[in-house]
Image (cartoon, rainbow, N blue to C red):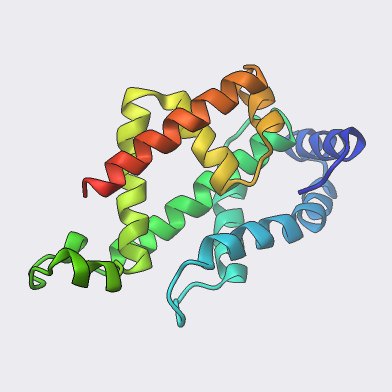
Length: 190
């Protein structure tokens, strides 16, 4: 991610210029954010199995098409990356769902705990479980779910997430600890 207030301000200015319809703003925005979005996409895909039908470039392009077509009033750089993270996560979840994976083993034979430790769930299956758990967390506490999405999926710093949500960094740290514990419990119950 970019660092420094000048870079963040420049990107925010570009986002507003794009929203106002300035002709070169979108191209300049793409030039500046593409490497960061590609890095984010690579991080998302790093836990997928080899031969995954989506690659980082394809994921970024699909996400950017959705973002360009959306009617969003951009607040700032952090808001842009938070939305980008959400869109990419949703594309991956939709992709996993479309491949008809049978959730939680379906008709697979039952295994002992010792055997289950050796055979880990498929990454797409875990992604679906995580998505479901994040939706459950959002129903209970939407801010905690947003923080997980922004920090762990969007790559925002805790300071940037605090700024986006209008809370203190201490609140972000506390909420992330609670969200991680809640998700850990939820995922281990699946």
